[in-house]
Length: 285
Picture 1 (cartoon, one colour):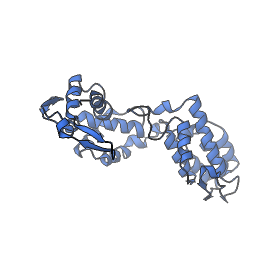
Picture 2 (cartoon, rainbow, N blue to C red):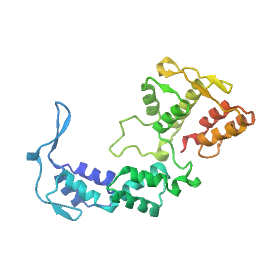
Picture 3 (cartoon, rainbow, N blue to C red):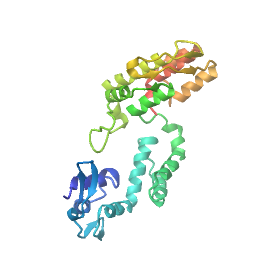
Picture 4 (tube, rainbow, N blue to C red):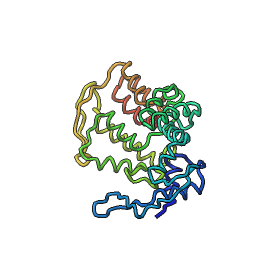
């Protein structure tokens, strides 16, 4: 049956964005999406032609006997769709505030490529804005970025991923279970008094159990069996230059705490890495 909620979400959340369509467009698009159902036996999506409204519809000024693919084609033909998607990518990878001119440039290339995601990402990641120092540390890592990034940085091998899911859940992101179809709000919304404590506890636990207490090259301790981590080895930098490099790699901005400076003064490379990861700036990207 016509599902106006689905048609509206397709336009508002995934193609055009709010304010770039009318209620009439929603109603007509809902008719185009009719005919789909689910085969409960094997959970496959099925299209049943006899349930589809094959009459003429008018969507964003275009009129035809649109089916689902036809309705999507109409949405993709709108320049606003490319702009909307690139803006979302910008806010995920560059900064909370987008550069309209740059977004328009990337969106034009994206649309000309018939929506090849790699074209948009290549242009975005090679843009001056992506590498601009003023955009460093303007975004907050999502729980998944924080947890997976920390595990990879410390080369912790997780045999049991349940503890990873538990960690991200405590930070407000239950994998594959967003609060609604829009998804998580992201950005500063990731940080609250409760989630900040959970984030710091995770990083403290990861650095405590995975890094040697001292020495430039020592075996890492194995995490508790319940966490399913295999012991590994790591070569820690010992020179002051290498210590500074670790700080630069781990933190997008100068640390706000004194731990990094104190460990650097003592030429304690392990201490620098641990202090950097426990610094609030480590939560940013």
